[in-house]
Length: 218
Image 1: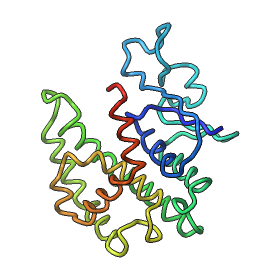
Image 2: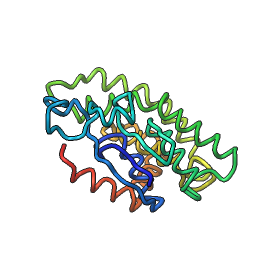
Image 3: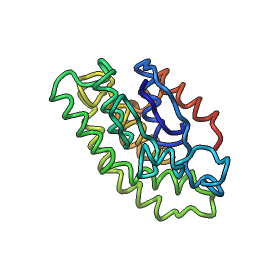
Image 4: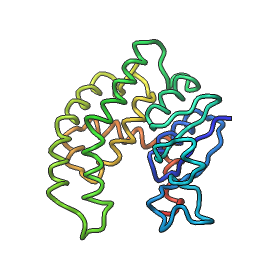
């Protein structure tokens, strides 16, 4: 059976959301980040990214990871592209052109959006107030203005990224841009992005994933 390793409070959220969209049967192994533990290698420590059992799956020591038969994958967006292509039906590509576009948007999410979106999240919301750096948050918001404009134009035709329908391309990017939501001005300047993200996050599988995430220890 396909196995997904990782906790909901990590990039594994992307894989767990997609599995819910597909209705995929899988085994979930809730690996947590080693840095959350005082001694990740202590006897009795929960399975974590420093555990030898997990490092045998992903030697990078990061979550998520996936095992599907003889295929072992790490990197959350690569896992999702595989799951969508193999099991996702209309969530995956209909032809090589759609597959290329889905790959393009996954790489775009990583290179153009995620580094800055994480800075927004950390310095406007996630870090304790005393550790936040407003200048870093402002710089990240400024850096995201151009990518948001690109995405807003890309959504103009159909409201989706590929094929005029909700696909793994939308899901992957929506989970990256969730990190930027503490900066509402970005979305006010890109109304199609705001409407698209709201529609993605209204999907039942997203809501189920977030409910499980909220129930997980912080």
